[in-house]
Image 1 (spheres, one colour):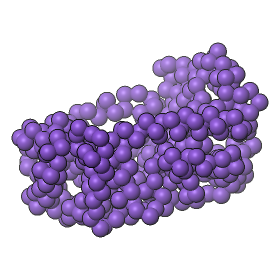
Image 2 (image 1 turned 180 degrees about the vertical axis):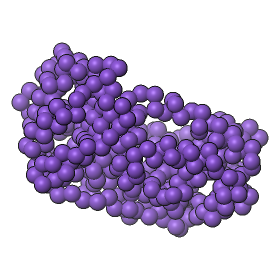
Image 3 (image 1 turned 90 degrees about the vertical axis):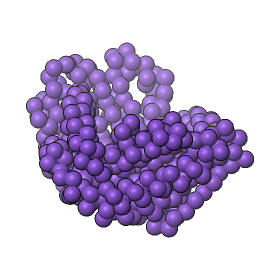
Length: 413
């Protein structure tokens, strides 16, 4: 059955339900997705959204973490909370026969999360330990430094996990206020897939949603990437240089030309072997084991980013090579062979991207979330199939903003 978008009206709010029926296995997956409630909502303290999700994974106040987990495990029910940049997600997964029981615990968690000093201290201790270990993860360090350059002065400049100082400052009241503001029905989208009847589902979840606070909806703010070319060098005890680079990319999630950006970026650096970056940096010059560039487009931002590791003594050569590759790419465009090979890969690998129900459900959700019509992904593939070389090269040459690259580099002291 094709995915659909239904609606459920509660408290004068139309709650969207992205639904994909799949009766091949007796399984059900349900997500409560709260918009504009991920790390983009960390306006007071960096890492608060992710910290709050970890608190939601500590069970209920009445049962506590261990007892709540045991109740779920005895029935093979999975409930977890997580965050993305723009969303806060609580997910339920179980056998069809356990769905009612799963909903019971799902509702208990929403009504009575384990908001205790003990839970906060436990999450704080584990989070600080993880952050301390990441100080020696130089990919993590360079990636965060790049975001700080590209989005200087905005919430997107902060690490989604927070910093040691910001996490230390988070207290019980911060988490309570975050959950009260963000886990509300006015921000809710429901995504459900599996062996479940949509009418029965609506009846069951309407009671849960009706008991939630209404709250206030808010739209996702768009953050512009800094147009100023910057460089940040961080000195660490390392045997390799870690080079992360990024630049503006003036395109939106629902742009008519998004498919062209997808093809162009694949040829430049997202396609692994055969991409420009990999061919020049690894195959021809032997400067790195791998090199990538990716398109990062969402409601809140749009930019290109990439990375590679190289020998300490090859740092300047590698950086100059990246700049030259991108400059030549914008100036000269791509070849007919590169375009045809990319078409074959993107069209040929499509079945792998939608082989599971969760993949199809996620795709449908993203289409709805981004304001696109359902089935947009398939139409995009048709556009890729018909894409002509001259049209692609015209698009590439128009987007000269990707030449304005900033670099975040971790190298030896």
